[in-house]
Amino acid sequence: MKILVVEDNLKIRENIIDFFKIQGHLAEGAENGYEALTMLHAMYDIVILDINMPKMNGKEFLEKMRTTEKNLPVIALTSNSTIENKAEIFELGVDDYLTKPFDMRELEMRVLALYRRKGTTIETEIRFADCILYPEKHTLIQNGENVILTSKEYLILEFLARHKGFPKTKLEILEAAWGLREAELNFNSITLEVHISGLRKKLGKNIIETVKGTGYLIA
Image 1 (cartoon, one colour):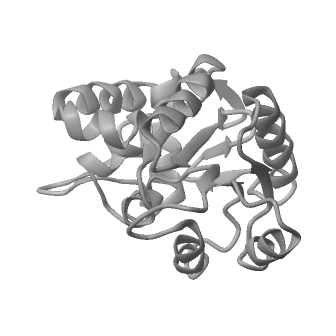
Image 2 (cartoon, rainbow, N blue to C red; image 1 turned 180 degrees about the horizontal axis):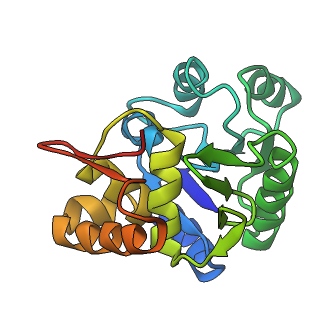
């Protein structure tokens, strides 16, 4: 699962990120709504959102996010437990909420429950060429045969398949597979090229096309 944590309190943000990473998930953070909006293209499964933040608070972020990401699940974190505040939050499109302070185990249970509910509406398969991707199981079938992929190979392939017909830059692909922060700090096109080469050996050379001066494409 890929989680975006939008929280201005550095300690809380890092604690949430570290907790979910230990559980085996990919988690990244933003300190305000402005930063979070620039990260949405990285295809998150769930957003954990603090409501009271400087610059752009959670309510403003939700209003802007819902114009393009209508189905992305959001769990709100709020210190205001009044019924009026909760009603306002739900009206903006939040799927669930927790009142601060909270227990990480309860947050995890709510995230997992929301992710399972989301699974009833997300794509069950992605088809391209002679391949079928199954996002919920992270598996690939080609010509009726199961193809074994590494975790990074799968993330790269799913990202390109979801944007079939649209060239994606190397940085965009790295962000999707490694996370925004890691891609920005350690941008290395050779790392990506090695994984693309591995995918081509498994799938055939014609599935993933090189777009000169841009990156890669599944047509």
